[in-house]
Length: 314
Image 1 (cartoon, rainbow, N blue to C red):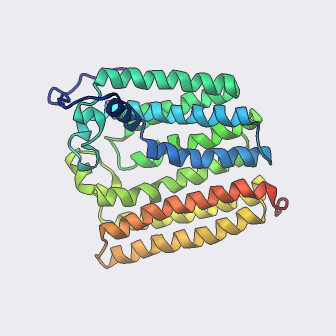
Image 2 (tube, rainbow, N blue to C red):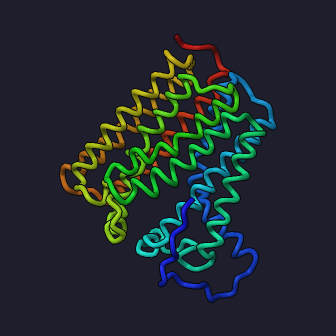
């Protein structure tokens, strides 16, 4: 990973630096909320691939290795984006902006997490899982952060592929293969990412404009963004139903996919309706953002339960 020179005006932390504060700063570099969301998809995918409970060590190695890989990517992201983070209200308290962690410390930390994560996935699961972990880090750090983020309004669409990798990693950990059900799960998250993230970028549009980041929600009007959110939501729900004929999903998953999908679509249509009438608020946008998380959580929870209740629906 190539390094960049630290911006001269990044502060040096002058407060009392306790061990606890330093530890919290390092944890913040990993973007723990993102890790939580990624882990929500990992274990259910492993259970569905196994059609039961995988071995405990395999689960631990995959979950911990995946979390560390995501943390490594997050730390690299914080290092690379430290210049723009200081311009945005949403990110002004990140450790590299406050000076609680130096750029060198963050870079060493990111590399260390990456190496440990790949070793865990490679030796704790199998080499294919390790290679997919490398791919996930590279997708987020190089493809999204370095190449796409500052150049195109479609940054989160293609860059979001990194967030889809945990399901491939989870499936490969169990089967040592990447099969069609795993690809469908990958595509569900890929299509889900824009209607999840664009409402957030609508709320923080001023932040992104100040940092010259062309997030769609920041550079396009609410009417256009809401149309894109609705279209991607329909594509997400349609893709989720492919797991029934292709992946052998049963009635628990099918019912959850239909009901939660209808609810998610209703939320996006509500956003679109308000946008067409020019009265979108931050609360409306964030309701879709949080609703998208609930939708994905319900979907993957059902995926985890499905193998234990009945057989394939088709």
